[in-house]
Image (cartoon, rainbow, N blue to C red):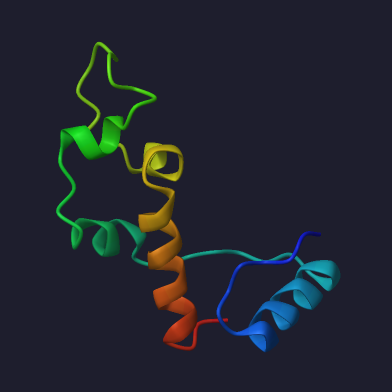
Length: 84
């Protein structure tokens, strides 16, 4: 497993150790957290889906491709708050 880019190396080490020994689930209010960023259609499209034929705003699954820093920031916020 590659090193995780978390600010807290001890937390990253624990997460990696846990992932080797058990199944981990990620759950939280991801949609609510993403809504705080007030992303527009162009944010969901990014360069990759600039010419896509349908509206993409609200398709949060695309954000891992078009706005990876936003998705990482949401996950980091959960870790900073003490989520395991």
